[in-house]
Image (cartoon, rainbow, N blue to C red):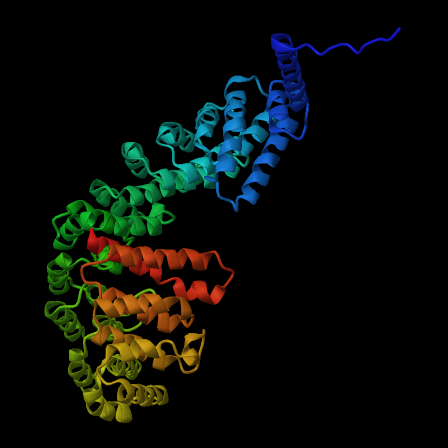
Length: 569
């Protein structure tokens, strides 16, 4: 008897069997995926298992780092974002809601902070709050601060401030969080902090108190952040720091913050110079300790701030102070700062008048050079060839003790050589030959050859800066590059300024780059935020390189950048 094979069901019955098979297959695949250690979903589930959490965090971050590497470190790449959407939410939920041990918390927050994903901010905020309350470790505060520095979530402002104010650098364990918190504060710089920061700045610093280091930390950070916020009402508190001996560790940063405030500090500093701010005069007197020079500390420092800000409206106050002050050292400092303002006939007249009023050596700190030598050198910052006849006249009329006279004459001759145009060489040559040292005679010869080659063409001088003979550090032919940069400023325009900025990356010779930066400053009488941004980018790129010579040459950018911004504000 023959047996026929069983018939396959047809119609609806057959379709039902196929559907069941597909569902079963999908279920099996799903179950396999959930048990597959090579899939992030497997480790996400392990976040709910206390013994497996640390390993789960490590594996999930491995997935993330691998995805990031394949995407060329682009966190916004679709594949990175897709993975982040799978793992960051559950990781954040675990940190915020689960009862975790310290080791797990640290590892989990480290992973979340590294993603810089907005989904992680709830965990970061909790870490900052818990640290301020003594419930989280300094390591967690460190990781949270690193996240805030990069992501800058506004919601972190209050907990970050609280964490910062509870950090004591006198506690060795807390120091690991101190610098990251400082960097996060500067990066976020929330306006709501202003009152707290000003209050911190007003506190005394007792040099003998155990908490001295903590106060210095809090006040230096407050100073940094106020410089970013730039409130005009911070001008007086910051200037008070400069005049308070117990705050000498904070004072240098106070100067930087004042310069960053820019336009807002002009009026308060003018009040100091004019004598309207009696509080600062009394503070200077109380801090002088019997030193007559320090009695003018308020005047000298106000002038330094105004010069560093570099706005033209400060000139009348500085010019008036030159005539009012009693001491030649102070007069020289005030006049030196005038040279940092936009060039003008009145500014030139103020500096020349101060020079002619000074009768003795009057050593000017920090190098204690004779006051007239300091002003002769500063005159070059005007980049005005019209000063050459006056400089030559002062060489011929120089008086004083031999040592002072020699220093003043050298400074006058150097500045005249730097500023002279081609048709002024015959005016300068006699004083170089009669009073110049071998070095000035060599520099005059090099300057004359350059003037003969370029005449009054600014572009020619700019192109000379490309010469590799003096573009490198410590080049013996460096003075030709200095003269070329100076003439670019003397003869140039805004277009020249742009060309100078383009050439800066190739110049490692510090004196040449310094004069090129002064030329950029001179050609920006109204400031220029775009140029400031370009210089900041060059400075930051230089800092990222292990090149000591380059970083040394770039250092003066920190003087020019805030001045360009302050003039433009």
